[in-house]
Image (cartoon, rainbow, N blue to C red; front, side, top):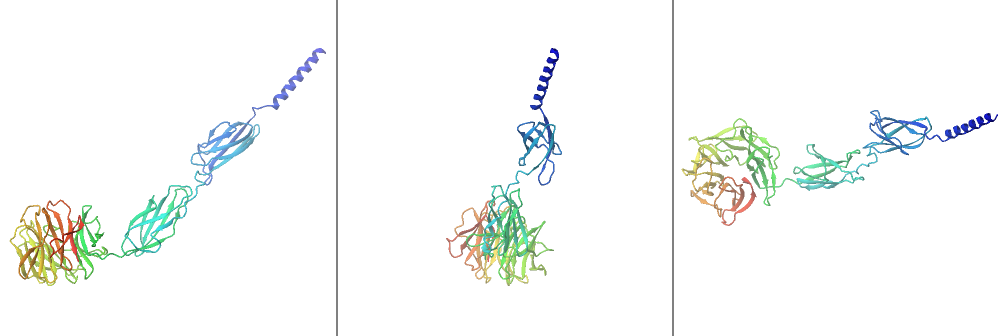
Length: 490
């Protein structure tokens, strides 16, 4: 009996011990699984980091955005995170041997970002007039999150509905080149690269009318000749593009047109355009302009603007301004080439020379081609820049007084002269000309009290300066336009 008593005691102790271990089992496990997707598209997110608090294992999602791992039973805050997304949290209470599945929908990191405010157009004001053709567009945009903004600007010309688009501008101002006398519409679209773009209202502005510039001249740009107009204050406007070669402008106020020369492939042709550079038209086609030196060749209008006269080697042609009616007016009898000319009905002045530009003759003919008067013959050196006075009593021309001749057509001391047909004398008017310079491309002013011309160092490399002087006033030489040549004053 005593042995049986001991057996009951041992069994009781074992029973108590077994009950105690079941109550404090801290090794009970559960399974936590789930999926991580994008909040909007529900596309799976790979390599999202899954972690818990209290801390347990850290895992990463597979290519399908799924995860699974074992944790101790208990309460957890589960976190899902991935670069460029906002962190997401879910809570989970797991019992022993339980499996809980969670789904995390991650929003992009910019989900709380706010769009920029609607752009406020500042300048030009809506409806503003007399705006410069080098206008500055200005606007103001506030972004609540101080994001870097880019802007797209649309600029529309109302006369022909042409549009200029300026994209990815990073400043809140934009300088634009616009045409004279035109109305433009413009607006601004702002983007922070995150939210929907925002667009401003549309403003309008009107540019100033084209100025009544008295001067036309040429500048060398981008390897080409470019025709400009300018005023007495030195303000200039380009009339032709620096992507094409255009030179020798001749203005006619009767028809408000400019005739000029322009390269067309390997040839040179006569063109016309409006005084503001619009409506460019090619006049000559079948017979191009030609001569010993194309930049020395001149053209001329008839007084009423109906015809344009131009040389082609030893021939002088007249053509209607619309390109019709090509007529040969004159041909030299000795094969010399026609270089300079000026027409003042009913007289035409011509300068002819040999293939090198020398053996010059300057004379006048009538409209039928009959020679009237000889001004220059048998004098060595270069000549040019001929221009008849309004009453045909005088002729302005230039002459290299040194008589120098060489194969590069360099001139050493070219001066301006006025020939008087009444007494057949020439007067030097190159007052106060600096030594080592040439006065070239001379033209009378509209009142003929002044002349306009190019002054240039005789090294043929220095840029020219367009100057003017009073014919009757020795100390009157004045600079007008720098780095310029081939002036016209009408």
